[in-house]
Length: 147
Image (cartoon, rainbow, N blue to C red; front, side):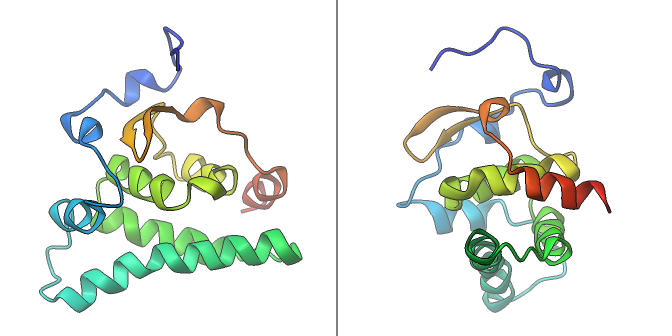
């Protein structure tokens, strides 16, 4: 995949060493645990609860895809909580890895929260994920504009 030479968001999101660390099915839990920043959490059950938020987001997006019922505030709450326990770049990398098939539905939320970097590296089988080329669902964009 060839990258454009400039990005409007690039100046706000320099490439970090964390971004180039690979994320795949084999190292997902280790990756997620290593980057978990919840200072007040002392148990693995709290870590697992936070990781399960990805599953809840998937269910909410699937419900939207099937019935056009969007719980945008609930999805935002889950993403905000994940952003509180992970750096935004790591949170985006984890979400897009686990929800790559729903990327066009997740991207508007990440842009709304101003946390989406222009590129993510080594996400699953994708060496360079140029987030600018991910389409966005217009129904979600319109719902977020009303907030």
